[in-house]
Amino acid sequence: MGRGMFPNRTGVRAGHAALAEFPVGTSAFGASCTHRGTARLAFLIALTVSWFGCENIPSGVSVAPKLIEADGSIYTACEGYITVYHPSRDIADSSSQTYEITFTDDYGKARDLKDVKAYTIRKTEPNLPLNYAMPAGANPSDTDTKDSNGQPLMVGHIYLFGKDGDEGRAKWAGPGKWERVPCE
Image 1: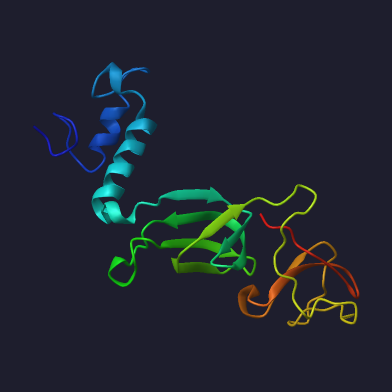
Image 2: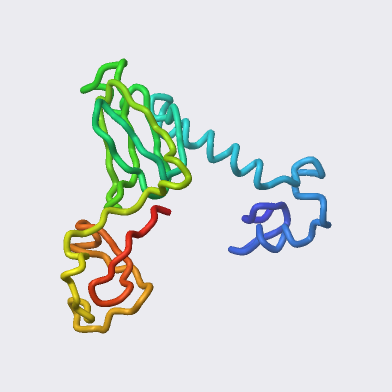
């Protein structure tokens, strides 16, 4: 037997060459194993469970943008996923009655709320979209037409304020005209 994935094949690319020899609708493992995507997904789930252990499996996942009310404070999840763990992943320091919520906020920063006792995740009304944080510098008195690097501002472009947007982001619509940027 050769050193490759399949008998009588050798070399670094042996597995790739052998796969090309199977007719459409079959595989090296027989006709019943042609749905590689399903098999890969099952493998990844099994690998995740074995790698992280059962205590790190999220108890809930939502797609942003949404509002999160956690222990009386309101947060805006602007992009990506909102993941809820119950109990918190740091079990040594938390109670089995608490939650951990991870999300990307309206400043584009990853947030990790630990030891949350009560939370609600909800959509807003369709006529009230969620927006990224509006920076204090994006106001009518800001009539600059150049960015901090001396480059001209371009109408319709989104500009980040602060370091990597940590002060917010806004769309430039002309001198003194800034618009909110909707969450993704």
